[in-house]
Amino acid sequence: MRERFRPSRGGWVPLRGATVPAKGGRRDTLGSELTMWTRGIAGALLCAVGAVWIAQGTNVLHGSGMSGHGLYAVLGVVLVAIGLALLAWAWRVRRDRLANMPDADS
Image 1 (tube, rainbow, N blue to C red):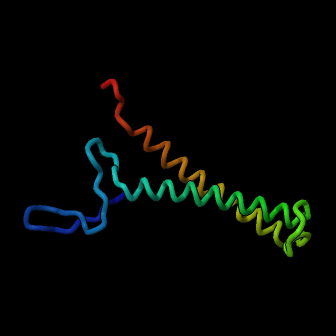
Image 2: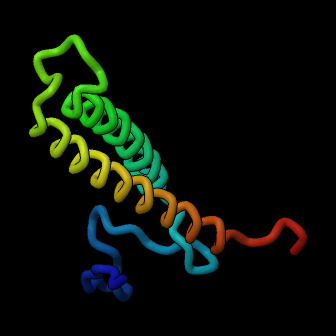
Image 3: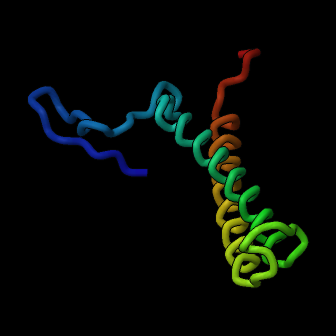
């Protein structure tokens, strides 16, 4: 990832809003941690809503205007796919972050 810098009298300084790697070359920003959790929670919610829509669209779950309409089953599959993609993205970010953490022994 390329950082954006601007020239300054004393050298190059990062642009406003750009994150700069901390010691050891890893990023330690509250924003990226919050973004990871937001992706995970949004992914889980989309999977849950998608599962309900699939159940209603296939007439497994009764008692709604959506029950028995195949369109909602298709939309549910789309929501589950998007939710799984968000969960995988959050998991990958977390895995990479844990891999770059220094060992407690050293």
